[in-house]
Amino acid sequence: MDFVNATPAPAVFLNTTFGKDRMMGAVIARPAFRIEDGALLPASDFAWPIGRLPAETPYGNFPGDVPYLTGGVDVFVIGSLWQPGGQPGTELTAEIRIGDRLLRRIAAIGDRLWVRANGALVPSDAQPFVSMPLSYERAFGGIAETENGPCAWPANPLGVGFYMNPEQAEGRPLPNLEDPDHRILSIDDRPEPMATGPYPAEGSLRVESAAELDLDAPQPVLKRVRPLVFNRAHPRMILPPAETPRAGEIVEITHASPQGALRFAMPALAFHARVTLEDRGYDFPLHLDQIAVLTEEKRVVLGYRVVFKYRLVKRERRRVELRPGAAPEEGSGSSREQ
Image (tube, rainbow, N blue to C red; front, top):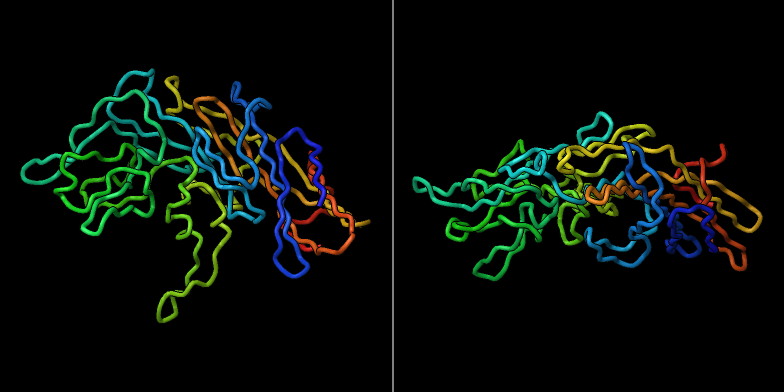
């Protein structure tokens, strides 16, 4: 399949076989923007990972792209939370909102240790901080030592605060990022990690959220794996397809800088793929499947994707062209067999 990108957005075509003579194809586009006065303006000087190969970046490690449908819109917020005016404080609570939807509340707390008080382990007073990275290293998780060797917390092996017993925890740190409605009070608490970047590939939450089990069987049986398994964000940072943001909806991250919140309106942007098989042509709209906000750089990357199926016919000319704008009326859906 020849691929032509007729847009200024970075884009890639991927395909794979899924039968004797059938192929799955995907077109992915990831335009970048800068935030100015609440609007998104093109930023061609800013790159974001795209393609089959894994990428290690200052913003996290990204596995390679795959030619499959995802289960919703990944939302990444990459950067730090800041105390108002850049003045030190011991705690703050930030919100991530898209339109009228509250996606996540995060409590950022200064460094603390487990200490003894009246014979019990309790969190120490928090130390003041100015900014707090929204990284999985600051969220609950980590690796604890056991008599059989190291044991990683499956939901976030990169984190901190996972201990097997009081002796192991005493004098050791707690996470800096917590759910403000479910604070850690005991070393037996096992919360989900509260971070907002790319979810670690080794983390267990992606598979747990994607697995659909038959609970009526004598023992739980895996019925199917939902497309969420191909998403890259924390499961609680994925918008269902029905909640895909519309043009004009406001994205807001509070405490995104010393000056306060970062806000921007979703743009009215559309792409479609023109697929030509010999003398037959088909148009498919791309759908939004990623919003990445880089708070320090005031940059936004939007990801768009379409997946389609086609038969592999010898010597047949095959071409896909990424075009700007909405697909013609005869275009249909995001996945169709040709």
